[in-house]
Image (cartoon, rainbow, N blue to C red):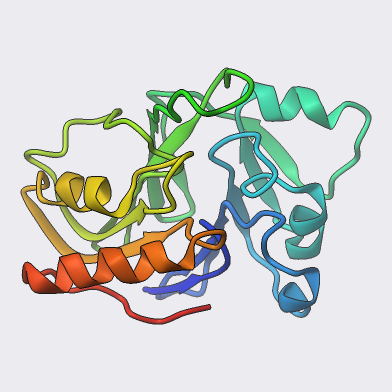
Length: 211
C-alpha cells in the first residue's frame, strides 16, 4: 500500500493491485499538480471547497465518486464523468478490496454555516488500517480507545480543526498508532512542526515531509 499526501487534507491511496482511491483532494491542490494523475474512486468528507472541488474531481476523473447528500445537492445540473454513490454516517462499504467505514466528525463552532454531514473515514486496505479524522474540532465519531491503526491522519490547523496540542492529546487515546501524520496546516504551517515536535518527543513515529 502506498499513501501520497496532497495539500490540506488530500491523499491518494494505492493498493498492491494498483487500485487508486483519492480522498479530500480539494481546491488547495493546484490543478497542474494533478496532470497525468487519474484515480479509480474518490471519497469526500464534506462540502467545504478545500475538501470538495469540482475542478479537482474532474482533473482526477474517478470512475466512482462517494458523496453525502449535501454534496450531491450542490451538483445541480453539473455532469461528472463518475458513477456517484450517496453515503452517510454509519455506512460500511467495499470499494474494490478496500473497506471504508464512515463516521461523524464535529467541525466545531467556528464554521459559518452548519454542515448537514461531515465524515471521517476508517479505511482498511492490504491488511493495513488508516484513520482519517477529516476536519475534527471536537473529539467525535468512533471510540478510539480500543482502536489499533497503522496510520492516523489528524488535522492540526487550529480554528476550524484541532490545535497541535489537541491533536496530540487525541492521538494518545488510541490503543495503538503505527504512524501519525498531520494535515490541514496550509494556512498555519507552523502548526505542522509544533505537532511533529510533540509527537516525536513522546515516541510517536510521524511523517516529517512538507508538500
